[in-house]
Image (cartoon, rainbow, N blue to C red):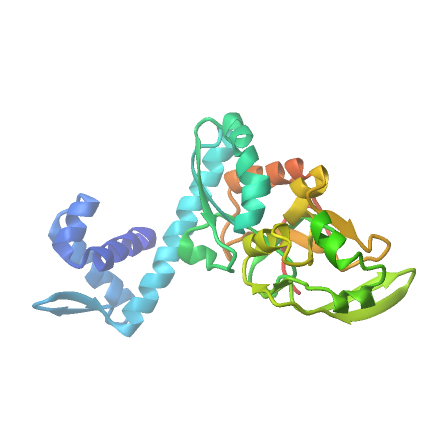
Length: 310
């Protein structure tokens, strides 16, 4: 019995809900499909499907087998695609995920250049500030910032950005310019409530570290909210240079306490666990490195993908 063919048949039966529907999908006769499932159950020594007048339902063992079999089939398909990509131009669909603000400022405006280089490639962009399940969403590569905790993921360190204390000239004209981190307690600070933000910060200068707790009347859970409130003059913020790069360049926003350092923020390319990284995903990561002007690194390792151990 061809194990891969049997798994493909079983997955089709579960997804189609009947032998006859699976047979049509596979362009096989129904007896051949039934025989394949019977042989598979005999080989495994377990009942995979429950038959009733309402159709077919996987047993507990059958459901677990279905999930693993589907994943195995996806891996084989991906391996074949990687081999094809290696000998030809990139094609098909590349599904990427990124935080809304970072993508709006740094990825989407430059995406045409990437597409022009690969005319047979389509890009599906999932914009979400949350940490999503890459396998569930079918994402090939996600761009994530900060520390990564999941040791099952494969990731590549792309770039690093400074964190700055930023505000509008109008805000500083009204509230004053802080000259030491301690003076931030006298200011309205817009708090970023997601991971990587918060109220506690450690500033350093010439080997000296100062811990500061900031506060403010506004707390938001998305980077777009930080930008909007800061640009609206409602306070200053501690944010990555990436978040306000256009405004820092044109003077709409200014950075203060520039003689003090804050913990930098890292940008990672994260790939679904247990899957081969496609040539399409590799090309996109290289493109992001290019537009950010940052050489690849793996935090002390080689530029290749590394298993996270944070």
